[in-house]
Length: 212
DNA sequence: ATACTGATGGCCT
DNA sequence: GGCCATCAGTATA
Image 1: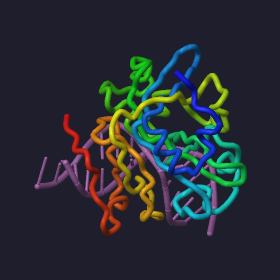
Image 2: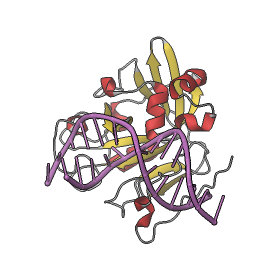
Image 3: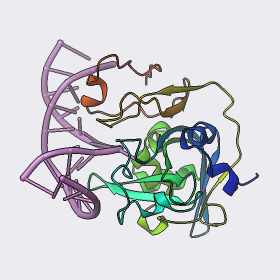
Image 4: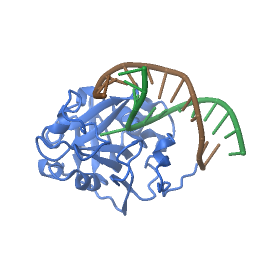
């Protein structure tokens, strides 16, 4: 497996987000490997993107988004969950790609233990779920995924059409279709539970019906 | 199937 | 003090 290099990340964020669908996310912790294929991402930029943490400029939290591309941006949200991003663009131009869902490949049993749920699908079909399944927290914020042995991305094939939609769980910037996901993949998150996410006029329902 | 809610803490006005 | 780039549980149909 070939690891994704600096050049991959150092581009216009929505392009990186689209190309990350199909890539393999690998996490090594205490000699245990967990990995999965990325099936859903979202792009966040800076001053042109009101939904982005970096919209209002540099703060302690968003510092990594302004730094070199290819680093992990991990943040804590809703008092409980961590979310994992890969930084993009160039120094001084903030950007990050949120990894929203993966399809498990390696370490399924470990993921089950860390998550405390049984169903394969529920293991990693959301941004907060996959970080818990992979043991990702603030200790990895700023990690350079181009060289790290703990956290990195490898080339992979989406093996199917990639669709776009409005981003999940944001109340502003809803005119920008910067969510990218694999059509009909069962591990794509179902789009959040908050009503306001679908209240904007013209919002379409998620295209993939899921059962079981 | 959709709708709503509680948990819980950091970040920013 | 209000708002979250969330999740799991419960209620309702």
